[in-house]
Amino acid sequence: MPKISETDLLLNPDGSVYHLNLLPKHISDTVIAVGDPSRVYMVSQFFDDIDFEMNKREFITHVGKFNGKKITVISTGIGTDNVEIFFSELDALVNVDLKTREIKPRKKKLKVIRIGTSGALQEDIAVGSFLVSDYAVGFDNLMNFYDLPMNDEEAGLAHDIQKKAGLSFMPYVVRGSENLIEQIGFDIPKGNTVTSPGFYAPQGRTLRAPVRLPNLLEDLNYYHKGDFWLTNFEMETAGYYAMARLLGHEALSVNAILANRIKNKFAKDPNKVIESLIKKVLERV
Image (cartoon, rainbow, N blue to C red; front, top):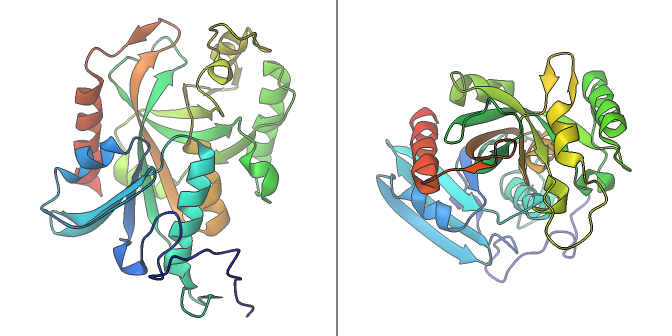
């Protein structure tokens, strides 16, 4: 089996992976991922103890125990470009021998749970509620560089969304882990999440710069194919689901709805909503 080159998989002098600055011993079977680095502390405050901390750029990691179970929580920052770095290096930590640079013959499957924030695309989704992403629709271009397999249903949705939303590109559509939905989100409403490559124009916001798709918010609000509706916007979920599929892991995105874009309402106490979601997820991992 060929070795992975030093320029394909970068390591630090201590043998840790380049961006995350972690070693294999730091990775638990269940990894909680958050976008905001400060949210790592919101998660680890509930740990029984914290055994390890690492701060590297936007990638902050705490490793500890919750109810006696080892949990790793890592921040990724914003966007699917960071999710790609996070997932690639996370996979290398468990499925590549970092000393020999050879891929291990027996692969380890991780459970990766994103706890994130999101804005609702439908009027009946309440600010302050929770939503698990059943399908993710990627408006970013990350999967243009990977050979992502989509089934007929996913490919059909991708083509239909492109046509009806008037997009100049075809999005990618990926379903999350059904096992993790049963474990973590069994009583949380399910939705279909649009992952955007930006916060303003790519999510239908207009400030001063001219936008190309002035009716994007309305088009996505009205879009449906049968009983498939688009429910919320954010900036990472599709990257998680696509990278998990490519690398053989399980991923689930659990969203705190902090805004309703149709009603133009925003949560009065967003930290309270996020903390409540963190507690719920931790109790179920």
